[in-house]
Length: 141
Image 1 (tube, rainbow, N blue to C red):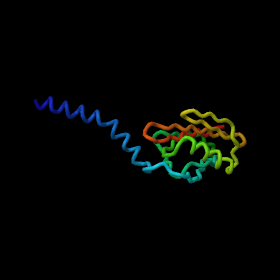
Image 2: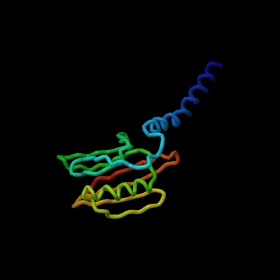
Image 3: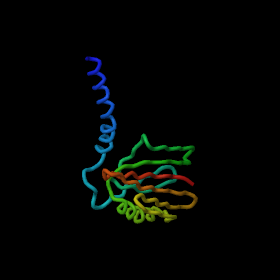
Image 4: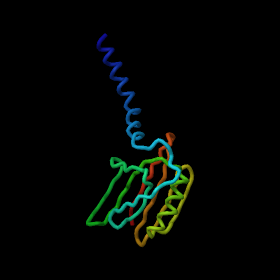
């Protein structure tokens, strides 16, 4: 009888893990979608770009390669905003940093690329069902 009870407790704990891991991501986010996105400057090697101030860096999903100041990176930020808000934000603020639009495609996800000299930044905007948006950024040449 004790063995069955322990097995039930074990399965309840296992089933609760996906729910608690989602809560950690939700705790990083503000309650409401902001009316206006505020730019925050980021610099990595020779890359200078902007992200919305209410977005938080997700280090366990990101990868940064830096060899003598030559940076390549896959960065993941999470926050609350609509896809349209982020597209408008990037098309407004990235040219101020000297980046020229290269290509864009939009559906439920959005992909925008900006070029500056031999450098390329690709932004992928991925919303999920909880109203959370993942902003995935590729820094490359």
